[in-house]
Structure formats: C-alpha cells, structure tokens
Image 1: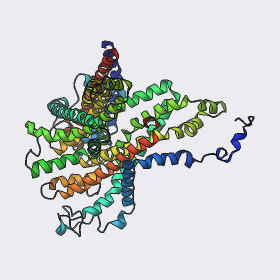
Image 2: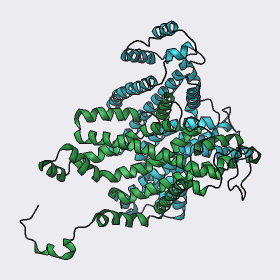
Image 3: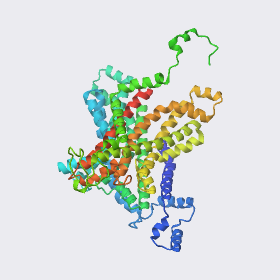
Image 4: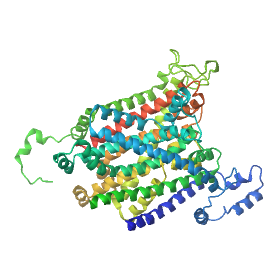
Length: 306
Length: 301
C-alpha cells in the first residue's frame, strides 16, 4: 500500500510540471508585449527596453520557464498587476473559502447522490426509480448558474428564507453548496444505480438471497459495499467539475473565493493572478485525485483480501 | 477468399444477397433506438432546436436587436410571449436567434475537440511505443485541469469572445475523445482482419482511416453526443461570466447574465434563456444515453 502511494506520488510529478508548463505557455500566448503594457501609454522606446531587461523578458523562453518553476516551488507566484500585492497572499485568503464551498458541495454530491441511487436501485423500473432518474437527468441538464439564480429567486426573493449573497454564516453556505453539489449528485445517483444493478446480478447475491436474507440486509451488507467502489472514482472526477463550477457559483452568489478571483482578474487583465489561480486550483485537483486513487485502491484491496 | 470451396447452400436467394449497410447497421440500430422512448424524445428536442435555428428569421416576429425603450420590462403577454428585456427587445425573438449561437458554438467546439482528439487517439493507439507515452502524458496534463479552468486560462490569453470560447471548450474536449479513440484503436488493431489487410499490402494510412476508424465510430458518436451537452453548458457558462459572447448578442448565457440584475423586478428575463439552455442540454443528454444503449453492445443486457 505504502509502495503504491509512493509510486503514485512519483507519477504526479510530471503532471505537475506539465500543468505549470501549460499555464506558463498560455500566458506567453497573450497578445501584446507585457513590457509595453506595464510601461503605460506614451512610454519611450528606451524605457520599454529597460523594463524588458529588468523583467527578464529578453531571455530565452526556457530560461524564463526555469525561473518561473523555481519561483513557484518557493511559493512565489508573482505580483498582481493591479494591487501590486503578492499573488500567493491573495490566493491564501481566498482558497479556504473555495475549499469550504467545495467541501460542503461534495458532501451533498455524495450523500444525496448515493442515497438517491440506492433508493432507485432497490426497486428498478418502479415509479420511485423512474421519478428519481428523471430528477437526476434534470439535475445534469440544468446549468448550475441557472439553478443558482432560480434558488435565489425562490428562497431569497419569494420566501425570504435565505440570504441572497455573501459568505458570513452557515445560512449563506446552503444555497451555493446545494446548487454546486446537486449536478454531481445527479451523476453519482446514476452511477450508484447502475453499479448496484450490476452487482445485484452477481452470483453471490443470489446465494445471499438463497440463504434467506431479506432485501434490506442483502443491499446493505453485500451489494452496497461492492457497488460503491466504482462510485468512488466518479466522485473524484466530480470534484474536478465542482472546482470548475465554483467559478460560476461564486460569481452568482458574490462569494470572494478563488474562482471569482480568476474571473475578475481575466476581466481586468491581471494575468499573474489568473496564472496563479488556475495553477493552484489545478494542483488542488491533482492532489485530491491522488487521494481518491489511494482510497479506491484501499477499498478494492480490502475486498480482495476478504 | 474461399472461391475454391463449393458450397451449394450458399446459392439460396436469402444467403446470397449481401446485407446492405442499412440492413446491417442502421436497421438494428433504429430498432433498439426507437424502443428507447427517452432517446426519441431527446432526438425530437434536438431536431426542434435545429429547426428553430434554421428558420429563426421566419419565426421571429420582432427584430432581436431592436431597442424600444418605451416598451421595456414588459411581462409576457399575447404580443410579447416571453416579455421584453430592459431595453425593450422581444425576448422570444432573441431566444430564437440565440439558438444559432448557443448551438453553433457547441457543435463547433465538439467538432474541434473531436477532430484533434480522434487523430491523437488513433496515432497513440495504433503506433504505441514512445509516441503513445508522450501523447498520453500530454492528455494526463490536460485532464489535470479541473472543469472549465483550462478554458478560463485559454480565454484569459486570447481575450473574451464567442470564437475563443469555442476554441477553449474545444481544447478541453480533446483529451476525452483521444482517450476513447485510443482505447478502441488498441482493441481493434489486435483483430485478425487488420493483419489480413496488412498482409494484402495496405499501408498504415489506409489501415487507420479505412479499416480502423469506421469500426470505432460508435464510441466516438456516443462521446460526441454527450460532449455536446457539456460543451453547450460550458459555453453558456463562460458567456454568463462575461467571457464569451458580449451584449447585445442574444447568446443565451449572455441573456441570462443580463437578466440577473432584474431578478427581483422582472425574473422572466433570466427565466426563458435559462429554460432554453436546460431543455436543449436535456435533449442532448437523453439522446446521448439512448445512443449509448443502442450502439454499445457491451452495455446491452
């Protein structure tokens, strides 16, 4: 097991380098000379040249990338063009908010999704199953930002139960976490259902039934444990979609998280902030995926041993 | 091949007639597909929106860009079925015209992603070796970006516009196609008929494009129809954030975004474009699920 974790850790190193390379290269594609932009309008050619040398922009690309990598590993993501503050500082105040949002959302994805999937699978093709699957299909099809606006309209404007926007209390968390998590819940529900139906067809479930076990015991003790293994992978992938989704949901609910920072920075063309934000979010995703893989392996192993 | 063999039974009229493409592929496909009611509904929804996009100028009573400030913020009525927006423009007319943009960008993005993804997948799967290793690592890196964040990074470099949204969404569709194609190519190239064709002297190009690609179309089509749903959602989302189509464009995400400010006073401005996106995406999801059941023999019970 430890060996496996070690091997996976080694494997993600090239991925992390790749991610930094992509982020670095994308920023090279930006039209316009950063030195010209930074120098401001009407700057003399000498001043621009001097700035270019100061910034090291006249060096070969691989040298610049090497320096970028070194800085990233030292936690230096550059400075915001707008506030002149270190990018890492801004990210550190915003990342916890996004992680908190993502945590509650993934909780909703897992709990709601698995419960719905199990309820569906217990009686396949019954009215309950069909209803749950229709709701799940709607959950996949409704854009999260539209669902966010609908829920603001319903719960904040009409019923006045929950706050419209912000991030101050538990009450503020409910709507964003729900609208962000429900799409993933729909996917997890479908996955859980089909995985359960697959497992229920296996011989050992027939044996359990032959032993005289009742429906609930079979599902709880025998089917569920095996059925949930493929679901773990889906949850891991959903976490990535969810991190991307925070970009939209934080904008809808005016939450000052990492996603909104990236979008706002694109609008103000504050590229170091975009670069840093995308990099950090991707690294979080890579680490979470590693964790999910290990978890998957762990559960699979246990069943192999049993 | 077996011309030497004399098999008299083969001369019966039924066995003698070679099944046409229709009988071999399309008929069984249609039989499974048409039994799946949800898939037929999905196909109907997609067809409906394609018709709307094609005939938008004939269907719309009003000009989608015509600003009439004394007509602004009218709730839905017999005259304006979906009401008017904050500039007095007819929302229905804007939705009809917007279907061209929202669907067009989805199709274009998936086409873009499919084109590059299929080529990468074919090369990776067919040649294997170091080429496969390199391409697979590239795909791993692309998949390491969560959700629409890669698209955001691309847009931040290229600048906000609907065309750039198409490219960005297309780029993050590439690895998904490449994966599917690579896997299927690996399976298909091991089959005996590929060896047979090779021994007949066919070169790699002919083997890949004439003999492997046509046989792995099913997973590509399934992936394509499901990707369309995601692509339309992502593109609308990016426009919603102000990074895609810009006002006064009637792109649905852009319309939804401008409806946000009137959520308290005129919620219908946001409601109708939101519903349009949802119904179209639902159509693609239903259709994609049905296709998968009809085309993928492994999932048939």
